[in-house]
Image (cartoon, rainbow, N blue to C red; front, top):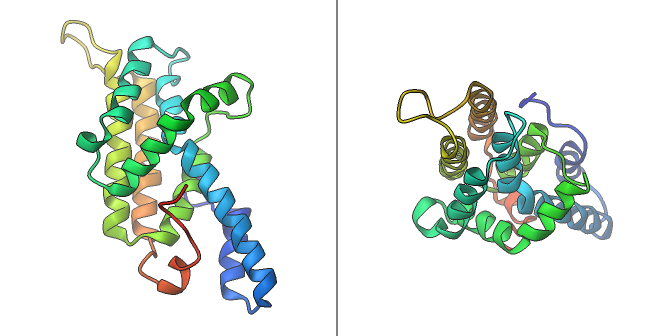
Length: 194
């Protein structure tokens, strides 16, 4: 699942390798940048949906914890990139929620994988490790928000833990495949401006 990179991302990788006329190449890269930015705006929200709704119910405590992570991003994120992703989610939260309720956004771990596939092209592995660590802390924080009873049982449900484990696989894959040190690739992406 995490190793499958299909569709737009694969097309982009092929475009970067091909010799195309400059106008066509620039147009295709602009399209891919637009897709990447849309996915980045949804990344934290997608992780929230996957974890909070893992057990079939989104608890108000999970929503509150998610919003706390987003607003306290200066203290909860080690990466400037994750802070930017969280900021974008704060700005777009109402829209994202509306899209979820109208089923324009569905919880889908493949969307997390696809989004991180773009990030892999933009940042080196040490930066990707920071981003993934921040995103993992977000997932665990959301899962812990509604669980546990007086410290007698785990604050993370089995369903939530299964999602966190899947996310960890995606994160590990992305860290291993980060190629952002290549300036030829990095020059095409406006990663922080979304």
